[in-house]
Amino acid sequence: MTKRGNLVNSFKCALAGIIYCVQRERNIKIHLAAAIMAFMLGWYLELSRVEFLLLGLYVMLVLIAEVVNTAIEVVVDLITPEYDLLAKAAKDIAAGAVLLAALASLIAGGLLFLPKLAILLGG
Image (cartoon, one colour):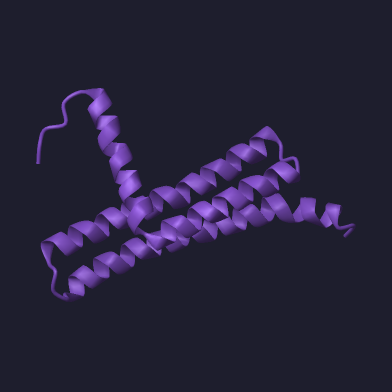
């Protein structure tokens, strides 16, 4: 592994990591599609700036959790390609963190969208 060096190179490495995740991980693609739909719905429902900020923070929470989960999976696979109970636990725990982030986002999305949808639908 080479030393990173300057700031521009650090950003290139970080972007390469994100691209790696998007190219290889199905779940991050699902999360990105859900994020796009949530932002489109937010635009349609005319969310306020603060509501969009909250939406963006929860979307980023899920994406960050997914990227960290992928990093943990890659490191575990590097250390032990064979089945190992501790390796499984590490992967399961990381996946659990993504699930918790997704649940938090789902709750926040419900709190943001449901009242506006109820008004729109006349309820």
